[in-house]
Length: 434
Ligand code: GP9
Image (cartoon, rainbow, N blue to C red; front, top):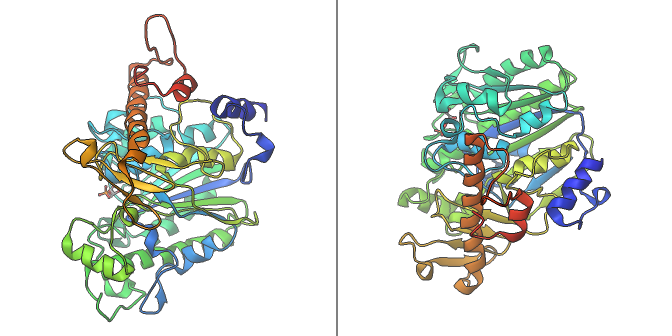
């Protein structure tokens, strides 16, 4: 694929050859199921409570035909769940002025659904609440999500908490798949594990009796276990309908569920994890990309985040990005990981493969904190200066690019004489450029 190679040449200075790319094209032409899971945090994966696995289905996916990204982090702006969607589909930082689906409503951005549509895919989204919630109804068309199935088109036969139960949503989605032109891109946003995580007794599969019974942590893991159970049923239905073998199923969490700044919840989570519940657990969400029959079983521990989802999926789908304007990187082939934060942690904070840097709320670098991602030991702030500057520049650059799109500029103009391309900016990362 010549254009993928030319993209790599531009982005990586010719260091990577297409034939050396891990996972390239392993799901080419398959139907894509992306499931964004409400409040799914990474610590539940392969974890037990009272001797029972919390996520047996996700655990089994992790162990077969999947890439599992265990150092994957949320990256939101003002729009919470909807920003998880926006960042994952657009590989751009979310807006902090307003929520991204408002800020960029109707703006013609290059997105994962649009990239697949250009390859002949049909697209559909499912969500068990009002179509207007987070302005999805108005934002989805330009995002490339052509059909939007939400509460107005669904049977509200089973409602839990904020909307139609995940089990019912999955079951009802099957009928739509039967009618859709293949190949298709399906995007499901789940709801049942929404705060405060209380689900009816007869939906609880773990039957927690000990110290976590009826606590926030106990309710949280019950609701995640419920999601896991209905995910297993969904996969069985895909198998029965002959939709499983030719699929790729990508599952990730939208954002944290258990608040770290609530002392009681923090105490419960710390005691459950047997370590201090901190940002590295709070912001860590799992990403699992399951490719049935592909024979890949690998845990990728390069630090990444929702910004990296789009380029990673393009690699797996064997699609060359037709834009240089992706802020993230293909995590299967990245040499170094880097995730900037701007919402839960102050702007300038970042996580890389070694450490977490927490920018001080007084805006003074010297009052900030940094510690090792692996040992929790303090890290010298001098080692964080470069990452701090990059975190700010990346967010500013992304916002600048998004604003250019809003204004309808296709080329980023830096000064009156010079048109600068994204790869120029990437190479120089110069503050003046933005
Ligand atoms: C609302 C749902 C949950 O549509 O997606 O949103 P949240 O409250 O988590 O942002």
